[in-house]
Length: 318
Image 1 (cartoon, rainbow, N blue to C red):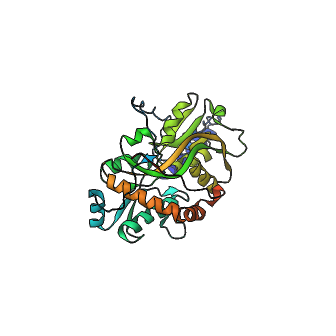
Image 2 (tube, helix red, strand yellow):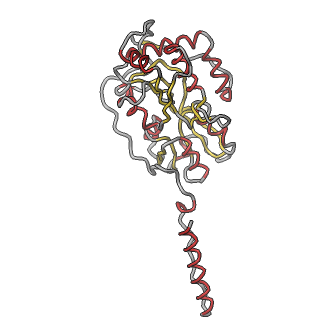
Image 3 (cartoon, helix red, strand yellow):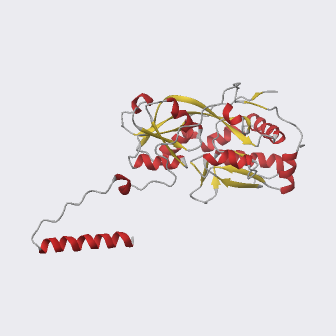
């Protein structure tokens, strides 16, 4: 603020001096757009191209390990000895994992789902330590042992199966577009040569590479994409429809448009070797599908998406 005041004062002095000499003041150019609208920290514009997909065997990313009825295994033993489940989540995904404005506590569909895992494993929904993280932090947090599991809008892909293990699908999302209402943009065909934003490290930002005319922009959090859209620095946000609906609820001047671009099934992720934890999580997911908990959580948090669907059907690989 001090720098601005000194600059303004210096400019005023120059103008007064020029006026005293009987000459016209020099023209002052408008500041660049970047100065008029500061960007969120960590914006990559354009985003670097995604790493090439490794060749090899494809998979069905929705297939996971069958549930286990036991509590045996090293990952489960470590959690029980600690007395807390450590879970990576979002704090900016409205209605999925976010800071509730009334309490300041984490809340949402994914937060409650993690609490159900803690209930069955440790006997209490409160025995959880939540670790808020960005999309790009999910895999390193698992492989580095920072968290036991991640429930943070993580799309199950064959590529990510090479780095982590997934539960069965707990939510079936699809990548779409968020644009200013009345923009005339109806799909990716309308975005050639324009900037489209998604979170760094997400499946959505990688998928934008399938549209050569689009200029991808990456941010640390999807909510930062909404800020860029509001500042007219991008033409659209592209991520999972459930996230876009949450953004549109926070800014009614925007709308979700276009057909689904790619399916984005969400799974709970663990370290690759934590197969005992994967099987246990799948047992919990079987329960919440059958006892009505999944439907209750959807109605509580995601009713804005429309009629509550049936839970995703579990698929197993052995």
